[in-house]
Image (cartoon, rainbow, N blue to C red; front, side, top):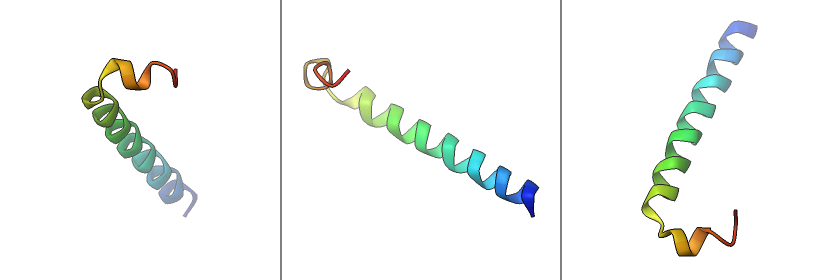
Length: 36
């Protein structure tokens, strides 16, 4: 059960990181620069 939870957490992390990267890549640098 612990291994399954770790795998699920890793999968969610990878999915979130990929989605976040795609979203940021499509946003102009001028808009997200102040947030950095």
